Length: 369
Image 1 (spheres, helix red, strand yellow):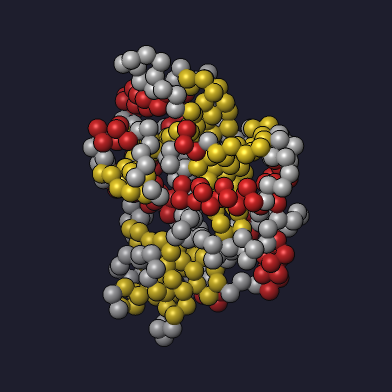
Image 2 (cartoon, rainbow, N blue to C red):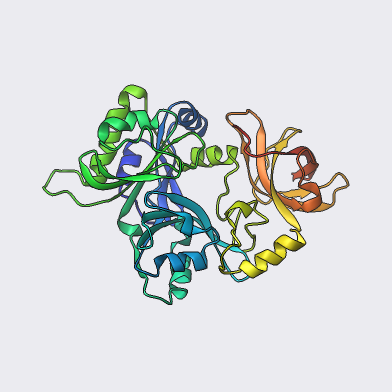
């Protein structure tokens, strides 16, 4: 398995480690519920350096992005970010991603899922028929997500950039914790506020010194010590994102689900032509056969990935894609695809758990406000 520059830090902090997308990643430290509460109520640090980053530069950069992504990236200006996705010829989602506009028309950064780095790179490269220069900087880029209502307050003393007033889906670039060329953004995957910190992991200049990764990690936890800042694993990241109804690639969206089926019509813009735009326009006109919905369990039981969803008569109407016991709500919640007739809010559905049909109700997302 691949290691991130913070692997030694995780092990030293007592993390339970496991493989994720080919990387040795921390799953939990003090426990998922404790870490979940820390992010919702205070702040926590996630190592998400396994994510992929591509730089697209040159006169054809925007045109390339427009042709492969569903959202309209022409709306981006310097310092703005957009959520989008790549689609195949059949409308399936190759990946969901973030587009950072570093310099309008000239330079963009795409942030993709760790499990899809090679697939995404090959797909975008195949469609790069112009003069766009592509650079895969995934292996040398560190990414820490400091999430929670106190995150920006904890980090502000480490930089001259104004991150306290950083608007949602925007970014700044400057000096942070004594390191230059650090990019700080506000996108979030937890619904708790906070920022993401991107930087290159340059090695230590002298023996005994920490690398950039070590310096920034240590600086963040020194600044956060008076606030009780905690390291957080991927287990709590999953429960946090699920409470917000955010999709996880490979669970809730994949190559065989379309943005319209996944409730991502808002990032599917037909004002331009992109891969599968004609297919998706026809699907929109005809109406989708299945929809991704959020549901809360009425009966006691926890829904899990790939559990069957049935109607009151026991007919198969869909499947669960994500499910957990919500630490915030104290009840079991989930996401899943159901046939369109059962997708309305308050629809009664049944989750098959160990040959029993447990009642659930379709609810409006997100699960928490």
